[in-house]
Length: 445
Image 1 (cartoon, rainbow, N blue to C red):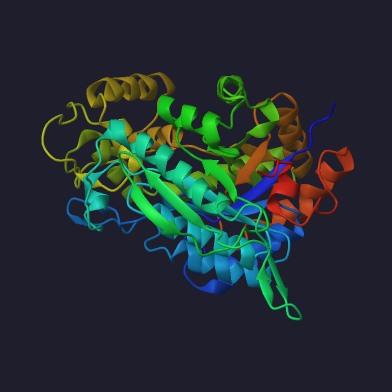
Image 2 (cartoon, rainbow, N blue to C red):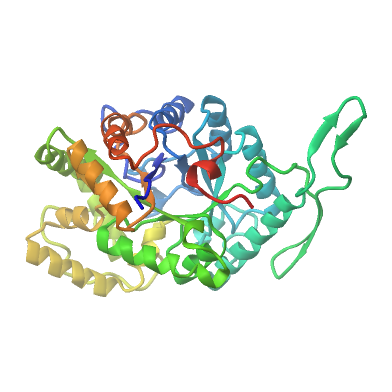
């Protein structure tokens, strides 16, 4: 049976994925950018728009790291506004389970589901660093081993609140004076290690029953969390070998939770670069990568691994000959990737030196290589064939596309690749239903 391709669009936020210095780039804060981006995605029959989260401005050497896009509007405000200017597009927001409370998150997403008539989705994430936590009342108070335990009980509690209106509807019968079908909905009581709450949830059952649940973590705990209760995963494995391994691993975990393989969608983030020919696209992709990794960005990235001030380092030469500093505070704060770099920085530096020497790469070229995320590069027909191949081979169930130019970088894909996928019969020509669950083919709770 031929699988249908699912597509979504990620409006990139606080990072250097988007080339904000390009003359074609627009604002990352003004609503018109989000509106144009969302309406382009809807024109291409995409399943949803995806917003990530940044809870604190990143810093390097004690200063705001302004080589990335800096600043991000509030997720719920943006998504609620987009609900009014779109009709079918799903609205997926990343909201942290470490620093929020179940009642307010349940209320916000249930409200968004009502306002959008069944298009809300929540990407459940955790936060690991005390630096980000300083913005919140409790600070970075959770040990790493507790983050997913809190996330699990957080999601369980939110589901209980959403289900507290199950079987009760708003009838609003003016003649009889009866407003609800049953009396006393919304009562809840939840007590565990993290939450001890009791009260009455005040938002009626939303169109999807429960908004769609996404998960984005890649750790062992993250994969189990997704297999147990998520509807979809926002993963980083968009290549053939790694993608198939991740797909099989996570789908294989579903049975022990009484779930089928169709109950969880795997949707990796993927970038793209199009050209009139494959060769032209390759050349353009090279230019894009050098714009994304400027000399200053390369130098700052190396500082994150070496944990050392490299202000006078020449990135057009070889990598630093000395080893990274393994003690002391991290020179960069607020990036999740820094935690990975800090696990064994000396071993990673040696690995990079070997790669740079074997491939004759300068320090900047090496950074471009190891941070590259360009998944689909080529003429539109090449990209359409590749996407279809990956989905049919269970690399994923579709992709969340991240253009390097916002808000208009998505339009070439919609105009040139989507029609080719439709001709193949692997992509919709109209929306399947009225809710995000309808369009993703997910069960209703």
